[in-house]
Image (cartoon, rainbow, N blue to C red):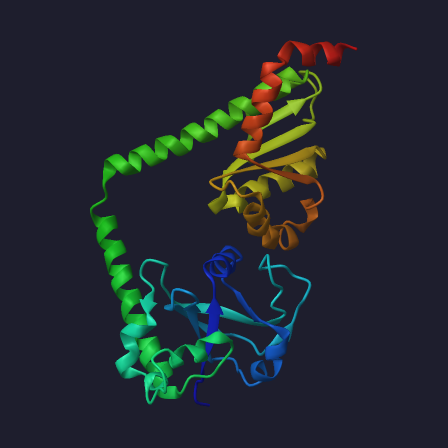
Length: 307
């Protein structure tokens, strides 16, 4: 069957949330259900950034529509009429294509009664493009994606080593600082605390024990950048299976706690659902604040613990 092309509207926020949740599901309001029923696997969604009037990418529908008002992907609106998708071409906010740059090639700009009349088409989605307009837009996005990829490859071929080194040192410094702070928190609270605790096949960032010499940690901490949380969750799951301690995941690289929760949601509802209730998630900023507060009153805390 002939492929159809459909408009898929995003704001900057909903686009970021879509990407953070794996770029695997797109959704629409319930009132668009009748239109959604016409969309078939293999059709293309053309992603459009509202307010900026730019084209962001192309998604392929991998399923027909389904209804899900329970799984949270977007913070502000549910968008329960959903499709499983895969990105075909993807741009970023800097390389997104202004729709007006294609106005001489698209039928939606023809025979307008007023200069801005074309914008009416982009006020609700899904909406169906003509096959000709769909092909023009997808071709333009494909070309922009190739150009973006070529530029990225050039940057990889000739890396600015001084910036790479600084970034790496900064990341390692944050990681080491957080481990030290977590270790010191344990000591302030009267626990035996150890960094780089070995328990094959893993090396845990920080563990606390009630007293030194006990075989089982009471608390296990993993510090991980937001882009690689699955490896940290695998270690925490192993710790839970072995010792049944309290689990803590400290996520770096993201200050907004709501975004951290949204990032982790697919993992904690999927592969690592078994540790969902046992894992406390913290940001680096939270650890720093707790460390500062307890360090300031270190001696007073010890007096409380001796009561």
